Length: 302
Image (spheres, rainbow, N blue to C red):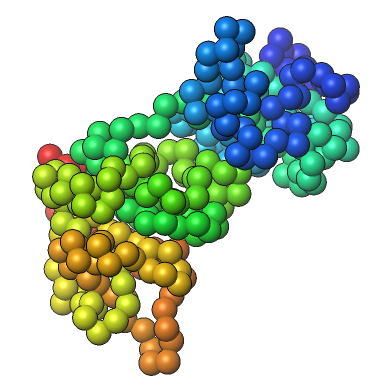
């Protein structure tokens, strides 16, 4: 084992250092009444609670994010990959090394990637501060599928880069749920996001005051096809609804424009994550790729 003071072998399932990983459900990890999230005086020791990230690739992204890492749990086989993923944080992060069987036993599932990290959620950023720094804002309205939410964050990171951000309405699933983090390849930890304020009325008005054009991605003949003839605004808020119910009537009414992705006859719709990626690529082709050709920056509004 690597000789470092922050690396420790654990073999006792009752070791207190393993408590954050002990069959913890995502809702319990973030619950304010979870004793693990409270200090000796009963005050919150960890605002927002904790989350669990899985895999060395996700740990690599986590290490570059704003989030504080409490500890990392690995097997001997994955220790080297975890230390490499932690990079400069490797000397300050507590790393627990346990046999594979013990890791599986305490977590309650087979950790086939061999790496788990416990992180502190901290305070969720303010929505207007997040939007003010964004060039492209994706608004997720009541998306309850963690795979879709994770995939959308991955698309925002890949196609909008540092100019991308997200708002989530109150009924959206938690983006820091372990599965959402994994599907996003960790990018829910790096893409700025916040909870949408008073959606849709107050939120739409706030976005307009920041200079955003609001487009709702919807199906139907009343929506304009997102093709080469449609001018895509540079500062865009793209609103996506859950598969099935779609966007709320209030959002559709308040949006500046409804847009749809052209498809072959007989196909009802695309998966919301796929549709988001197609729309973001259209925005990128117009504003990011063109800016690079012209020698301009499109990282942040200005």
